[in-house]
Image (cartoon, rainbow, N blue to C red; front, side):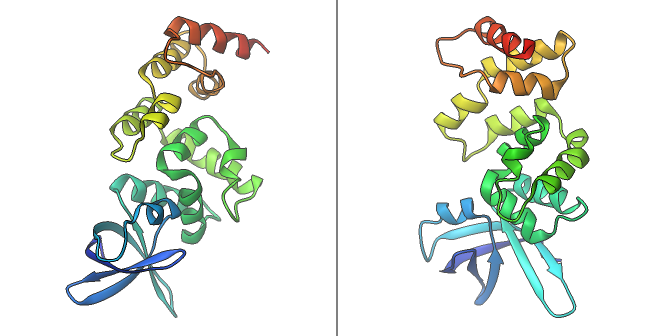
Length: 205
C-alpha cells in the first residue's frame, strides 16, 4: 500500500497528474480543485494516496491533505459510491463543503457532482451524517490552509458557529440549525443575535 508520494509534477492532464518520485513517474487521479492549484511542471508536491487494485489495473488517487483522503474513504465506504464517484464529489465540493452539505442534509448540492443522482446523494447523507460532528466541521474549516477570506466569512465565521450552537442549545437539531443559519446572508456588521433572529424567522416557516 502506498500511503503518500512526494516528488515533482512531471505532467498534468484534465483529471490526473504524473508525479516523479526518484526517477519513477506515478500517474495519480486527483480532484479538480487540486489540479487548479498546481502552478506547473516541476512543482514539488506531496500527495496522500488511495490505491485501487483490480484484476486488470491498479489506480492511484491522490489528495493534498489527510482530511481530503479521509472524506474520500468515507465516501467510498457508502454502498454504490466507487472511487471515481468519490473523486467527482470532492472535485465539485471539496472536503469542507461536503461535510457541511451532509450535516445540512443538502442532497441537491451533493447531486450537482458529475454522475451523482439524487438517490445516491440521499444515501450519502443517510450513511454519513451520524459520522460527522458540527463542531469538528467548523474547526477543520478554520484550520484549512486553503481557506480563503471570502470562504471563511461566508461559511465559517465565529458568529455563524455561535449562532448554530445557540440554536442547538435551544433544542433544535444540529442539521436543522445549520440549514437555518446558512440561509441567513450574514454580514460582518451583524451580531450573533441578529443572525439568530433571522434564522429563527426562517425556521418558523
